[in-house]
Length: 122
Image 1 (spheres, rainbow, N blue to C red):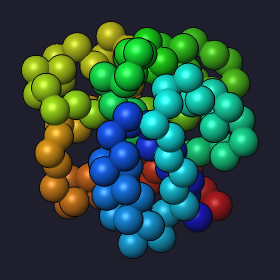
Image 2 (cartoon, one colour):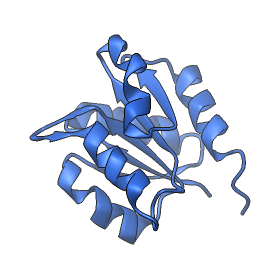
Image 3 (cartoon, rainbow, N blue to C red):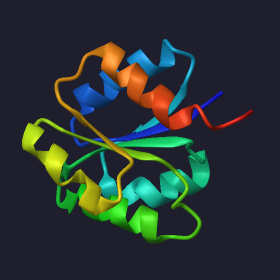
């Protein structure tokens, strides 16, 4: 079973994504605190991370850069998401593997997950 970590400071987004992804048989963990990302990665060992660009007091792009610069975590795909659709042009600067704009439809969400996890074998 694929494990997905979702990082967003909006609890309602986390709840919606947890339900949507769990319905597709993904194991999901969430956090509203960007500073918990690395401890969550260590304990949960996600196969994929969804991360909001704008987190309370933190920038998801900076956290993504740290993930991609760390030898132990760089292999984990990160999908950045934002309500600011213009962020699509700058997500690559963070090293993210993909971008999805909010609000997103479930088909698009599931397709993004499938694209990033299709190479993982269990």
